[in-house]
Image 1 (cartoon, rainbow, N blue to C red):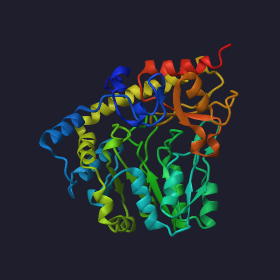
Image 2: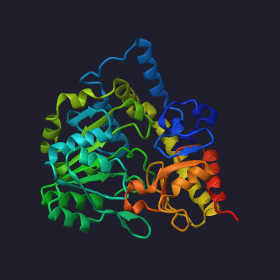
Image 3: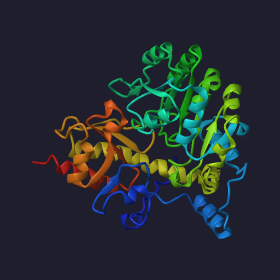
Image 4: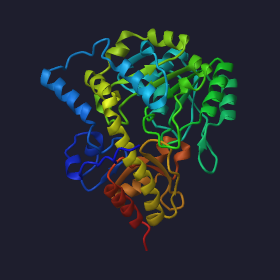
Length: 386
């Protein structure tokens, strides 16, 4: 990446935002919890949205807003993945897409495998689809995390009907290897199960790690899989509401085509407009600049924790702007983010919400300026200073 790192916006400007990150806590609290970033939007997105507002282009989303083709071009450029725009449908957001697909591939009461510690809404969207969560935690290898393929096979053999995959994984930032995804696909095929892959963090994978789209992992993965993607995390567009349900096999494509039209009507027009701009080649330099800034921050966080919280355990993630930090060496209880927010005035995501494996952990959003990150960790470190 040759683009210079993006510069985060100043705090006084950020505090004028009205989103969850900036309206959940009082001004003295540094918010590093929810997955919103602090960077200015890509210029192509600003122009596209400004033009839409100037035109009063605020009506219903058309059947072909152009985002399927834009994403196909983006996937080819960034991942070397050939996506057929005809096998892409839109909806409101990634979790809604997951729920609608799970409703089609499971029956009420069926079990769906999740891989904790994992994004907390996974525990809610599975029951919303009428299914039951089956926990198969990631394997801690000592240097990283991997899918527990033995455990997943045991659950599938016992009747689980689907796997809800997080690829790249939130909160660990793991970019699953092609080999593990191929093996997962073979297991799903052998037991007649489906894999639904949340790939919202896919644009934010750091070299030398590589993002492997699940549907592109193998021909078997294409036959058993569904991917749900969005520009919302990389380009900070969550409030605009647009996600894509992508397939690569005949049966999954038929399932997505069969979804009610209302699923697609939920797509936000501004989300589609912004997504087209985000996925355009014009935004590649901005994305490279974002990756450069986040790459520096993920490494800076390791240095800051070593300096101010030397008992913390943190592995630099392969992807995303979220850090999974083990604080069990401190006497801060199972949910250390509570004390950190109360006493250090830093808001972090609550570890236990990610599953039992999150006890004693926090998730830190490092999608901010280095100065804010430093201030946050220094505040936390003051809790253990003599």
